[in-house]
Length: 315
Image 1: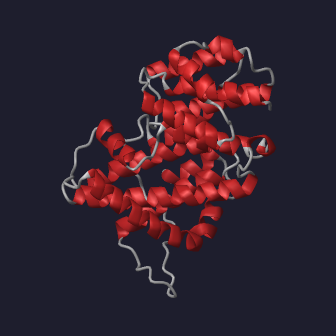
Image 2 (image 1 turned 90 degrees about the vertical axis):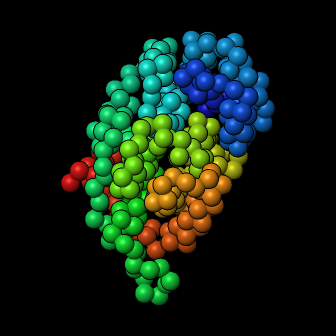
Protein backbone atom coordinates (compact mmCIF):
# COMPACT_ATOMS: atom_id res chain seq x y z
CA UNK A 1 0.00 0.00 0.00
CA UNK A 2 1.61 3.23 -1.16
CA UNK A 3 1.25 6.70 0.32
CA UNK A 4 -0.63 7.77 -2.83
CA UNK A 5 -3.12 4.94 -2.39
CA UNK A 6 -3.69 5.83 1.25
CA UNK A 7 -4.22 9.48 0.33
CA UNK A 8 -6.66 8.40 -2.37
CA UNK A 9 -8.61 6.31 0.11
CA UNK A 10 -8.76 9.29 2.49
CA UNK A 11 -9.99 11.49 -0.37
CA UNK A 12 -12.73 8.99 -1.24
CA UNK A 13 -13.68 8.81 2.43
CA UNK A 14 -13.94 12.61 2.38
CA UNK A 15 -16.33 12.41 -0.57
CA UNK A 16 -18.32 9.83 1.40
CA UNK A 17 -18.47 12.20 4.38
CA UNK A 18 -20.08 14.91 2.27
CA UNK A 19 -22.26 12.63 0.14
CA UNK A 20 -25.26 13.63 2.25
CA UNK A 21 -24.87 17.18 0.94
CA UNK A 22 -23.46 18.57 4.19
CA UNK A 23 -20.00 20.06 4.25
CA UNK A 24 -18.37 22.80 6.28
CA UNK A 25 -14.97 23.94 7.47
CA UNK A 26 -15.41 22.15 10.80
CA UNK A 27 -16.03 18.81 9.11
CA UNK A 28 -13.04 19.34 6.82
CA UNK A 29 -10.92 20.08 9.87
CA UNK A 30 -12.02 16.87 11.60
CA UNK A 31 -11.17 14.78 8.54
CA UNK A 32 -7.75 16.45 8.27
CA UNK A 33 -7.11 15.68 11.94
CA UNK A 34 -8.10 12.04 11.45
CA UNK A 35 -5.83 11.72 8.42
CA UNK A 36 -2.90 13.23 10.32
CA UNK A 37 -3.41 10.78 13.16
CA UNK A 38 -2.99 8.03 10.58
CA UNK A 39 0.45 9.33 9.69
CA UNK A 40 -0.34 11.45 6.62
CA UNK A 41 1.80 14.54 7.09
CA UNK A 42 0.05 16.92 4.69
CA UNK A 43 -3.48 15.69 3.93
CA UNK A 44 -5.03 19.16 3.70
CA UNK A 45 -4.57 19.58 -0.05
CA UNK A 46 -6.21 16.37 -1.20
CA UNK A 47 -9.00 16.65 1.37
CA UNK A 48 -9.70 20.26 0.35
CA UNK A 49 -9.73 19.22 -3.30
CA UNK A 50 -12.20 16.45 -2.54
CA UNK A 51 -14.48 18.74 -0.56
CA UNK A 52 -14.36 21.41 -3.27
CA UNK A 53 -15.53 18.99 -5.95
CA UNK A 54 -12.25 19.11 -7.86
CA UNK A 55 -11.79 15.34 -7.52
CA UNK A 56 -14.37 12.93 -8.88
CA UNK A 57 -15.07 9.35 -7.88
CA UNK A 58 -13.81 8.08 -11.23
CA UNK A 59 -10.62 10.14 -11.16
CA UNK A 60 -9.76 8.87 -7.69
CA UNK A 61 -10.77 5.28 -8.43
CA UNK A 62 -8.35 5.26 -11.37
CA UNK A 63 -5.46 5.80 -8.92
CA UNK A 64 -6.15 2.51 -7.13
CA UNK A 65 -4.81 -0.60 -8.80
CA UNK A 66 -4.65 -3.42 -6.28
CA UNK A 67 -7.76 -5.34 -5.28
CA UNK A 68 -6.88 -4.76 -1.62
CA UNK A 69 -6.71 -0.98 -2.05
CA UNK A 70 -9.99 -0.93 -3.96
CA UNK A 71 -11.72 -3.04 -1.34
CA UNK A 72 -10.35 -0.95 1.50
CA UNK A 73 -11.47 2.25 -0.24
CA UNK A 74 -15.03 0.99 -0.54
CA UNK A 75 -15.11 -0.45 2.98
CA UNK A 76 -13.85 2.82 4.43
CA UNK A 77 -16.35 4.89 2.46
CA UNK A 78 -19.12 2.53 3.57
CA UNK A 79 -18.15 2.98 7.20
CA UNK A 80 -18.05 6.77 6.87
CA UNK A 81 -21.50 6.80 5.25
CA UNK A 82 -22.73 4.81 8.26
CA UNK A 83 -21.31 7.36 10.71
CA UNK A 84 -24.86 8.34 11.68
CA UNK A 85 -26.01 4.74 12.06
CA UNK A 86 -27.44 4.21 8.57
CA UNK A 87 -27.19 5.61 5.07
CA UNK A 88 -29.58 7.94 3.28
CA UNK A 89 -30.43 7.66 -0.46
CA UNK A 90 -27.69 10.07 -1.57
CA UNK A 91 -25.08 8.12 0.39
CA UNK A 92 -26.42 4.87 -1.03
CA UNK A 93 -26.04 6.23 -4.55
CA UNK A 94 -22.50 7.37 -3.76
CA UNK A 95 -21.51 3.88 -2.61
CA UNK A 96 -23.11 2.30 -5.67
CA UNK A 97 -21.27 4.70 -7.99
CA UNK A 98 -18.01 4.06 -6.15
CA UNK A 99 -18.40 0.29 -6.48
CA UNK A 100 -19.00 0.71 -10.21
CA UNK A 101 -15.96 2.97 -10.59
CA UNK A 102 -13.80 0.47 -8.70
CA UNK A 103 -15.36 -2.47 -10.57
CA UNK A 104 -16.06 -4.20 -7.27
CA UNK A 105 -18.51 -6.89 -6.36
CA UNK A 106 -19.95 -5.59 -3.07
CA UNK A 107 -22.01 -8.67 -2.20
CA UNK A 108 -19.94 -9.35 0.94
CA UNK A 109 -20.34 -5.77 2.17
CA UNK A 110 -24.06 -5.86 1.41
CA UNK A 111 -24.30 -9.05 3.44
CA UNK A 112 -22.67 -7.38 6.46
CA UNK A 113 -25.09 -4.46 6.27
CA UNK A 114 -28.03 -6.84 5.90
CA UNK A 115 -26.92 -8.72 9.02
CA UNK A 116 -26.86 -5.47 11.00
CA UNK A 117 -30.22 -4.29 9.68
CA UNK A 118 -31.79 -7.65 10.44
CA UNK A 119 -30.52 -7.52 14.02
CA UNK A 120 -31.46 -3.94 14.87
CA UNK A 121 -34.37 -3.45 12.48
CA UNK A 122 -34.48 -1.50 9.23
CA UNK A 123 -33.84 1.62 11.27
CA UNK A 124 -31.47 1.43 14.23
CA UNK A 125 -33.78 3.32 16.58
CA UNK A 126 -36.99 1.39 16.03
CA UNK A 127 -37.06 -1.70 18.19
CA UNK A 128 -36.60 -2.52 21.84
CA UNK A 129 -33.51 -4.52 22.75
CA UNK A 130 -33.80 -7.74 24.76
CA UNK A 131 -31.17 -8.58 27.33
CA UNK A 132 -28.32 -10.86 26.34
CA UNK A 133 -28.48 -12.57 29.71
CA UNK A 134 -24.77 -11.97 30.23
CA UNK A 135 -23.77 -12.24 33.91
CA UNK A 136 -23.16 -8.86 35.48
CA UNK A 137 -20.08 -7.72 37.32
CA UNK A 138 -20.34 -8.49 41.04
CA UNK A 139 -16.80 -8.69 42.28
CA UNK A 140 -16.91 -8.90 46.06
CA UNK A 141 -13.40 -7.49 46.26
CA UNK A 142 -14.37 -4.29 44.46
CA UNK A 143 -16.61 -1.36 45.22
CA UNK A 144 -18.96 -2.12 42.31
CA UNK A 145 -22.52 -2.46 43.57
CA UNK A 146 -24.70 -5.15 41.99
CA UNK A 147 -26.69 -3.23 39.36
CA UNK A 148 -30.44 -2.99 39.03
CA UNK A 149 -32.11 -4.98 36.21
CA UNK A 150 -31.91 -2.18 33.63
CA UNK A 151 -28.30 -1.52 34.56
CA UNK A 152 -27.72 -5.16 33.60
CA UNK A 153 -29.16 -4.36 30.19
CA UNK A 154 -26.82 -1.40 29.66
CA UNK A 155 -23.87 -3.55 30.70
CA UNK A 156 -25.00 -6.29 28.29
CA UNK A 157 -25.10 -3.85 25.39
CA UNK A 158 -21.72 -2.35 26.28
CA UNK A 159 -20.23 -5.85 26.25
CA UNK A 160 -21.91 -6.70 22.96
CA UNK A 161 -20.63 -3.60 21.17
CA UNK A 162 -17.16 -4.25 22.57
CA UNK A 163 -17.30 -7.83 21.29
CA UNK A 164 -17.95 -6.50 17.78
CA UNK A 165 -14.50 -4.89 17.92
CA UNK A 166 -12.92 -8.32 18.43
CA UNK A 167 -14.49 -10.02 15.42
CA UNK A 168 -12.31 -10.67 12.37
CA UNK A 169 -14.97 -9.24 10.04
CA UNK A 170 -13.46 -6.03 8.69
CA UNK A 171 -16.78 -4.15 8.85
CA UNK A 172 -18.11 -5.68 12.05
CA UNK A 173 -17.84 -2.35 13.83
CA UNK A 174 -20.49 -0.92 11.50
CA UNK A 175 -22.91 -2.52 13.95
CA UNK A 176 -21.70 -0.51 16.94
CA UNK A 177 -23.45 2.80 16.34
CA UNK A 178 -26.82 1.27 15.33
CA UNK A 179 -26.76 -0.76 18.56
CA UNK A 180 -25.90 2.36 20.56
CA UNK A 181 -28.74 4.29 18.91
CA UNK A 182 -31.07 1.39 19.60
CA UNK A 183 -30.04 1.38 23.26
CA UNK A 184 -30.78 5.11 23.62
CA UNK A 185 -34.16 4.66 21.96
CA UNK A 186 -35.04 1.81 24.30
CA UNK A 187 -34.00 3.86 27.33
CA UNK A 188 -36.20 6.73 26.18
CA UNK A 189 -39.14 4.37 25.75
CA UNK A 190 -38.58 3.02 29.25
CA UNK A 191 -39.04 6.55 30.57
CA UNK A 192 -42.19 7.13 28.53
CA UNK A 193 -40.52 9.34 25.92
CA UNK A 194 -41.74 9.34 22.33
CA UNK A 195 -38.53 9.76 20.34
CA UNK A 196 -37.84 10.25 16.67
CA UNK A 197 -34.58 9.39 14.99
CA UNK A 198 -33.23 12.93 15.03
CA UNK A 199 -33.68 13.21 18.80
CA UNK A 200 -31.76 9.99 19.33
CA UNK A 201 -28.92 10.86 16.96
CA UNK A 202 -28.65 14.39 18.36
CA UNK A 203 -28.20 13.01 21.87
CA UNK A 204 -25.55 10.55 20.72
CA UNK A 205 -23.77 13.34 18.83
CA UNK A 206 -23.64 15.39 22.05
CA UNK A 207 -21.14 12.84 23.34
CA UNK A 208 -19.03 12.96 20.19
CA UNK A 209 -20.06 9.52 18.95
CA UNK A 210 -20.63 8.72 15.30
CA UNK A 211 -18.81 11.64 13.64
CA UNK A 212 -17.59 10.78 10.16
CA UNK A 213 -13.98 11.68 10.96
CA UNK A 214 -14.03 9.49 14.07
CA UNK A 215 -15.39 6.56 12.08
CA UNK A 216 -12.83 7.19 9.36
CA UNK A 217 -9.94 7.02 11.80
CA UNK A 218 -11.33 3.95 13.54
CA UNK A 219 -11.94 1.93 10.40
CA UNK A 220 -8.69 2.83 8.68
CA UNK A 221 -6.68 2.13 11.83
CA UNK A 222 -8.30 -1.28 12.06
CA UNK A 223 -7.80 -2.06 8.38
CA UNK A 224 -4.28 -0.66 8.01
CA UNK A 225 -2.95 -1.79 11.36
CA UNK A 226 -1.84 -5.20 10.20
CA UNK A 227 -0.48 -4.33 6.76
CA UNK A 228 0.79 -0.77 6.78
CA UNK A 229 1.93 -0.02 10.29
CA UNK A 230 5.42 0.84 9.06
CA UNK A 231 4.09 3.31 6.55
CA UNK A 232 1.61 4.94 8.89
CA UNK A 233 3.84 5.14 11.94
CA UNK A 234 2.52 4.36 15.41
CA UNK A 235 -0.68 2.56 14.54
CA UNK A 236 -1.98 -0.17 16.76
CA UNK A 237 -2.17 -3.36 14.75
CA UNK A 238 -3.54 -6.85 15.11
CA UNK A 239 -5.06 -8.09 18.35
CA UNK A 240 -3.58 -5.28 20.44
CA UNK A 241 -5.39 -2.66 18.39
CA UNK A 242 -8.63 -4.62 18.46
CA UNK A 243 -8.45 -5.06 22.23
CA UNK A 244 -7.86 -1.34 22.65
CA UNK A 245 -10.87 -0.65 20.44
CA UNK A 246 -13.00 -3.01 22.52
CA UNK A 247 -12.10 -1.14 25.70
CA UNK A 248 -12.97 2.24 24.18
CA UNK A 249 -16.25 0.97 22.73
CA UNK A 250 -17.25 -0.71 25.98
CA UNK A 251 -16.64 2.49 27.93
CA UNK A 252 -18.48 4.66 25.40
CA UNK A 253 -21.55 2.43 25.24
CA UNK A 254 -21.72 2.01 29.00
CA UNK A 255 -21.42 5.77 29.56
CA UNK A 256 -23.92 6.53 26.80
CA UNK A 257 -26.51 4.21 28.32
CA UNK A 258 -26.23 5.58 31.83
CA UNK A 259 -26.07 9.23 30.76
CA UNK A 260 -29.14 8.72 28.56
CA UNK A 261 -30.94 7.02 31.45
CA UNK A 262 -30.32 10.06 33.67
CA UNK A 263 -31.30 12.43 30.86
CA UNK A 264 -34.67 10.85 30.21
CA UNK A 265 -35.34 10.25 33.92
CA UNK A 266 -35.06 14.02 34.39
CA UNK A 267 -37.47 14.80 31.55
CA UNK A 268 -34.68 15.82 29.15
CA UNK A 269 -33.93 18.87 31.28
CA UNK A 270 -30.16 18.41 31.51
CA UNK A 271 -27.95 20.80 29.56
CA UNK A 272 -25.33 19.66 27.08
CA UNK A 273 -22.64 20.52 29.60
CA UNK A 274 -24.35 18.43 32.30
CA UNK A 275 -24.72 15.53 29.87
CA UNK A 276 -21.05 15.65 28.93
CA UNK A 277 -20.09 15.70 32.61
CA UNK A 278 -22.25 12.63 33.23
CA UNK A 279 -20.82 10.87 30.20
CA UNK A 280 -17.25 11.55 31.32
CA UNK A 281 -17.98 10.25 34.82
CA UNK A 282 -19.65 7.05 33.64
CA UNK A 283 -16.92 6.47 31.07
CA UNK A 284 -14.33 6.64 33.84
CA UNK A 285 -16.37 4.07 35.79
CA UNK A 286 -16.44 1.84 32.72
CA UNK A 287 -12.68 2.09 32.21
CA UNK A 288 -12.22 0.82 35.77
CA UNK A 289 -14.77 -1.94 35.18
CA UNK A 290 -13.40 -3.16 31.84
CA UNK A 291 -10.64 -5.46 33.16
CA UNK A 292 -13.28 -7.35 35.16
CA UNK A 293 -15.48 -7.97 32.11
CA UNK A 294 -12.79 -8.32 29.45
CA UNK A 295 -12.80 -12.12 29.59
CA UNK A 296 -16.59 -12.21 29.19
CA UNK A 297 -16.37 -9.91 26.19
CA UNK A 298 -13.76 -12.21 24.68
CA UNK A 299 -16.05 -15.18 25.29
CA UNK A 300 -18.90 -13.40 23.48
CA UNK A 301 -16.71 -12.85 20.41
CA UNK A 302 -14.71 -16.09 20.39
CA UNK A 303 -15.40 -18.28 17.37
CA UNK A 304 -18.28 -16.11 16.17
CA UNK A 305 -19.06 -14.26 13.00
CA UNK A 306 -20.89 -10.95 12.90
CA UNK A 307 -24.13 -12.70 12.03
CA UNK A 308 -23.92 -15.23 14.86
CA UNK A 309 -23.03 -12.57 17.44
CA UNK A 310 -25.90 -10.31 16.37
CA UNK A 311 -28.27 -13.26 16.59
CA UNK A 312 -27.84 -13.13 20.37
CA UNK A 313 -30.11 -10.08 20.21
CA UNK A 314 -33.09 -12.17 19.18
CA UNK A 315 -32.57 -15.41 21.04
